[in-house]
Amino acid sequence: MPDYDVVVIGSGPAGYAAAFRAAQLGGRVAMVEKDLVGGTCLNRGCIPTKSLLEATAVLDHMNHAETFGLACDNPRPDMVKLIERKERHVAKLRGGVEQVAKGLGIEIVRGTGTLAGQRKVSVAGNDGGVRELTAKAIIIASGSEPLELKALPFDHMTVLSSTSILELREVPGSLLIIGGGYIGCEFATVFASLGTKVTIVEMLNQLLPGQDVRIGRTIQAAFKKRAMALHLETKVEKLDVDKRGATATLSNGETIKADKVLVSVGRKLNADGLGLETMGIRTEKAGPGGAGRILVDDYLETNIPGIYAVGDVIGNWLLAHVGHHEGLVAAENAMGGMSKMDYRAVPAGVYTRPEIAMVGLDQARATEAGREVITGRFPFGAAAKAVVADEPDGFVQIVADAKTKQILGVQIVGPHATDLISEAALLVQTEATLNELVETIHPHPTLSEALMEAGLDALGRPLHTMPKRK
Image (cartoon, rainbow, N blue to C red):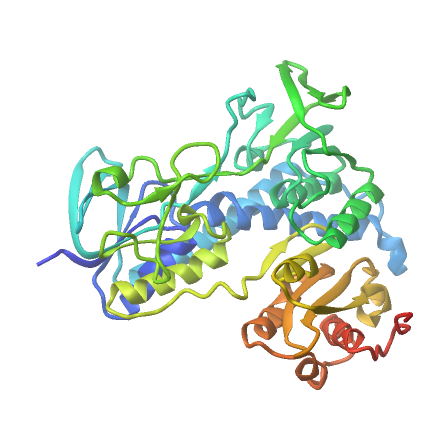
């Protein structure tokens, strides 16, 4: 008889969600973790970054206190205390995950897990020993890590990854960010608020490539307003490092000097060293930097029965909340269920200032999919709650089917966008219509009523903005 019903390799959001759900369903569960419980998101990603973003948001408010009729003289950051605060948050939340695991009877096995058979996991323990675990089902949730390009001189002192930048104890005078995706933009927000001179180099034609063009334009305008330098459609051809900092030579011929450099050009999937080849598990190349993504079906099972994979390592959506949901689905199937993964309404957020969030199709993707669409927009500058909060920048945009009025997607740039997107996700998931949205009473004054107002605009009957010209 196997030692466990389910063995999970990895304890990030996908891994611990899988372990928790399998245990809730009555399974005997082991969770293998070589590092810190909670994975990248909790220890080196989502949570520590948001801790710094929240702290610097307070600093921004203090620096603009006069706009609220308040006096706040000379606020200044203490980087050491900011990092200590961040570490307290991470430790508290990590302890919470470990406590729940204990309460559910899950065994946390400390070490590196490798597939040793269809129902076996070999664990090279952190204590030097080797242990073999047998299970009815195995769930791989090994995650990802920052991609370090070989052409760049990473030393994690001057040239940093999204992990090593979280350990800075001093505010750099200048920071060059290579890559204008969500990670680069979030760190740009943090360090611009701390007083650092920030420069972003992005090889494509807008920040947050692939998102709606209005999102790119809005965040670029906001960043320029905060005195950030942006180099779009530009590459770093060469990066030299010395004791004074770094010098980057750009494809446009310019040279940039910076105290620190953050490289945020993507992530490497942690599929190497798992024994995938030995088991014959199918993978597919997913960009530079090592093994490809693990291929799974709609039930998150690999081509080997009883072995599932979830989270970043399957390369679908490198988002913690998606991995979390995948973990729940895989665990239910590992315990004998037939749950199917549904990606129709995946919300995503970027915690810049202003915040950005989106779900479903934007106008371009809906049109590419052959849909005839209508759009509605509402600016936060016309929302009473945003005005009194002195956060009028941004908008809500709704994309809907022109005939059925089904809501296909929502894009939000503005205050608390990452919270507001949850209502939008429910609208997309349930295939709600514009009429159903606008007939739902939204409280006033709130930010959420901007979603209703965008719906009214899409229907051609805006309430607090002027109608579109025909």
